[in-house]
Length: 197
Length: 222
Image (tube, rainbow over all chains, first blue to last red; front, side, top):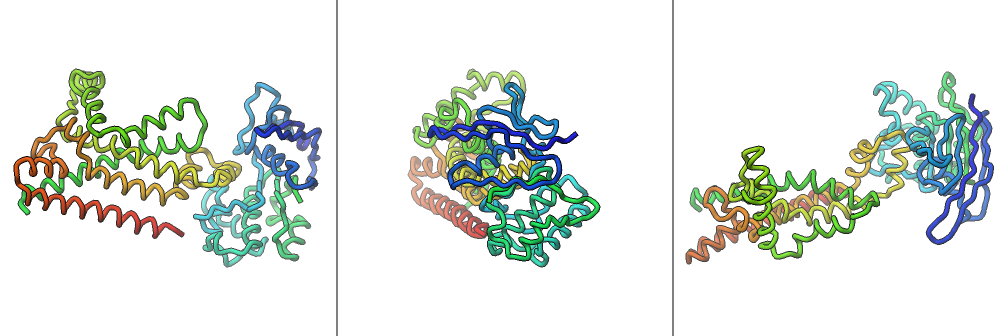
């Protein structure tokens, strides 16, 4: 049974800065959690630790029955196995790939036809039609952000981590994302979203 | 130019191309190991790889000769197990060129790999990509300009290699003599006009290699 996400960990940096997360809990039902705090307080680092891109110094991150990190002695879950969608602050689009290839990057295990269909669906949902062959460099900030969101959502992640989201979205797109309209009603995307406003 | 000269040019270009083929996979592996993970002994390997750049080429050649000679540790093993003789054959030419051009390639490729934003590789991992997929779809394509430039630089360096080659492969016309070695022996024999003609060919080949590399790099700029 999925009990959502429970995390308590400490991350130290070389310059003696310490980030401590005490009893972060996200429920099993689809829900949105927002992290607030002044800039530089470590919101991004917390998201990176949850995604598996950074390793805490001690503590545990438990997702459902899976120990993503800790307790001591257990090897951490790799980012690949966590199935987390991560949208970083500067979107992190692959500059050498087209919009379509960027969005489909995480679907390489699927048959080509299914992957194409899912990419098309997600692009329609986020209003990205017509941009399939463009490179990220030729997109506006808002379009880039939607591509990054599409790339994270199309893999149907179990947890969606958004760093400074929605800042560049136009009003209608923001509304659609906030309402959580899934791109495919048969297999809805209901990620837990931890987000850094 | 005589048939013998054409054969010499063709031989040198072929040896340089073969050595570049050897440098590419080994050098890419080294460049990645030096650019990405942290490990003990990295500084030592880094220094060893760069050493041929600053050592007199003759010294590098001497080391290779000692290692690969029939009484050398590596040479004896190769001879006993595979019946392979390296020194004073075309294989020695290729090896000498590879060792001498390796530092230039590793340096260019390593810089290019270090410039790839690690966040992009991390994001690929969150999207389920394993390390090989990350390498071949993200790291290498994004570092391709430096890798192409390094390849051409290594090829041009190999075309001009003299000191290590003559030590380990000697000067056997038609078998191990490369352009720079032929230029040297032409001067020794007082055939200055041939030396100048071959020098012109050398310069043209090197010019073409560098010019093509600049063009390729520009084409991949986007």
